[in-house]
Structures are given as structure tokens and as C-alpha cells.
Image (cartoon, rainbow, N blue to C red; front, side):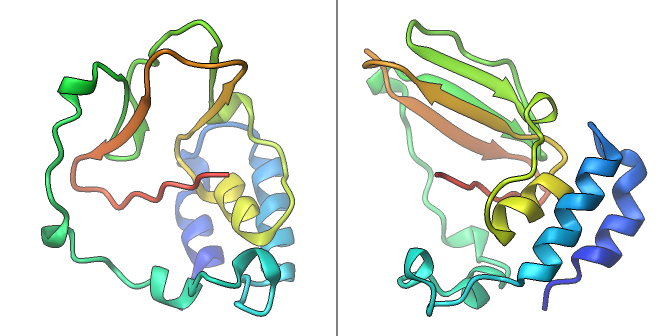
Length: 143
């Protein structure tokens, strides 16, 4: 179902950041295995279903323009220009690629081409909307 090691071997030389840290994160993820519904934090999430390719034609277009939000777009898995706002700190993945708790976060640390860590301190006056564009498969992880 998940062929992360084979994928990593094919693309590891093209991934940004520390290759050794990525390999360590992948090993930790493979050792832990994917989370199951028996784990409390994943009780309501069927990971096997999420790994199936979604029908992108079923996704409806949404116009966020009327909200005047801060927009963050990943095009083919690559982050575009980062928005700026008081109380919002955005860091590109490659500057924050540390091993994390849990297999899913470690798979992200090992295999993601680009990503974004968003920290909000206080209250934002605008919503932060993260969207994807392009033909490459994309996964958004919120924590």
C-alpha cells in the first residue's frame, strides 16, 4: 500500500534539506508503522482510505476572495510566496525539517518536497487559506 522506501530511494537526491535527517525520519516512520483507528488520536481517521487516490473531479471550486484572506498556495507541491501578517510566523519546511512524534509526521519529514509551518501568536485579523494547484499529488497535514 505505502511504498515509502522505494519512493525515497528514487527521489532522495532531489529533496531539499538534510538527507541524513530525512533517512532517520523515514526509518522511524517505517518502524512505527502507519497509525490505526485503535490509537486514540487516529480513532476517527481511516488511514487506508486516505491513501487511495481521491477523485479530484469531485472537488468543488471555492472563491475565498470575498473574505480578503491571507493566501498560501502550493503549486505542484512547491510553496509560492509566503504571506505576511502580524502574529503569523511562516517557515518553509526545509528550515524546519526535524524529526517529529508519530509515523505520519516522520513520513512527511522524510518525503515532502516542500512544506510550511505556520504559527499563530495572538489573533489574526484575516483568515489564512492554504490551497493547492497543479497536477502533482499533494497532501495537507494540519496539526
